[in-house]
Figure: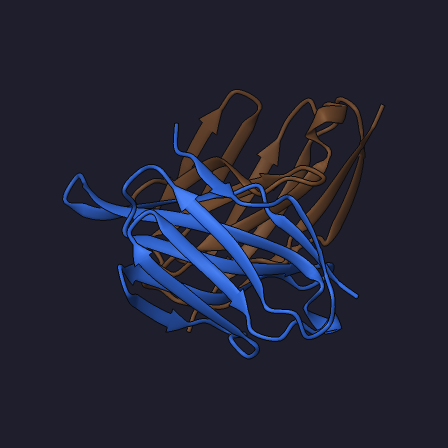
Length: 110
Length: 118
């Protein structure tokens, strides 16, 4: 089955810096890669996704890149703000059962 | 907006009790899921359902059962709660749709139920 590795497990940045979270996957059949943000006490919320026919996607301060050859994808957050502090999960989906990374706790210091 | 709701945000039960966690989605999604979330372990799939009355075991089904009598509702049942089932439980629903000649997919989560078994 699919295996997703996510790094780092914890990321601490100063407000205004950029943050990058990386994921690798193993199943070449995976064709959809969502990212979720989970704030304290809440369920994960979809923030951006990328499909296998696209190399990069941007939404304001958030971008995701995908390298299908190397089987890795990354979340980039620019100009970080304290409200970006949360746990971020990546996932890879080869059929309709997603496999999640273990999560990255992002802490943005004011 | 897709809405996935869970019956309780917080629940405290005693060891040996039968526990029901309810999940309802309002977008006519085919697929529904129950996950368990524990620190350092990420999201682990307990059970999923791809249609009414259909269910499949996930990675950690032991000690749990599920019921899907209606498309919009997916219930997780702890037959005899134990302290090692203290956790955050997340329900999700998803749908698959055609997009530009391919199959595409979206999944949405509920707010979670924090269950404590004492």
